[in-house]
Image (cartoon, rainbow, N blue to C red):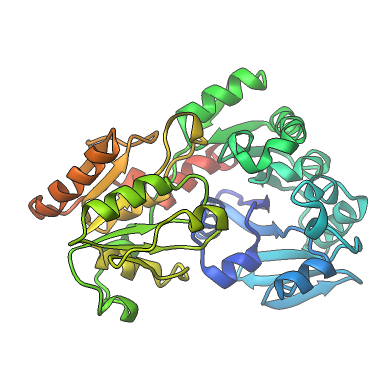
Length: 393
């Protein structure tokens, strides 16, 4: 039997978030499937550092739930699955990101104690050689310093296009350059991201590994969620974080133009300013955020699924996970012309204007039932195998 490869993984969304909300992000899905890949041995997940100020502000613990295997003064090694461990860090900085913002993480990940403690825990586990996957552009200094046999950087979104990062764009450019330079292998989630990264950072071998879905989770039947039982049908649903990527003007237009359709929005409010711009109407229902194990039941309860995202210069080069989830649930989809969508996947209606989007909601509702059958290549299992190929192949 071939030897397995031990992995050190630096996620963007740490494992505490996965335990709270479920594995709904690209990095969480791929880490989860790494654990079931027979080519992979132990997986050590490096959680992002937390400060006391952040704990007090967010009312959250810095500790991942699980079996404590080893611990230091301000760090812990925790077993969270049969062959998965997390390394938790409480940073000594009294302020951290609460007052400084996300740019604090650029320096936090580069701290010598962080690297020293991680290497101590690897020795405790008997991990003598390993490969490293980095999903986190903030962690460039740590990624560079780790003595990994092979290094892979997954630039899953283009943070340089996020308006919230405008003031820190120079830091992000420097961090991307560092991650691309030290990586042996480079991946991203879309063709436009690949073109941007290759031209901007002098690399020529960035592979596209798109997002995916766990087919069995979204194809099975669920009871209609309790908070949807009194919402009239037909239901046009959106499962999305409320950020600058959500076109609030488009939402306002289609909700007003289709007063006999119930519009349901499910997802966390990340940018309150965007949420406040969505007009309150009798046929619009915001149901809050849901754990990922609850979310498929909402998608199955929608009659048509929507992706009302901004297009053009306001996009960030992403690959919408929700498209795969909607299709796996067998639902018709109405979407703006974001990257990666087409009418090739069954009942996908691509709109080029607000009126077009509204008209296509009607067409989608009237379309004959025709279950969408996604091929195996669209699963998270297959996507993870593609990601791992240069490390385990």
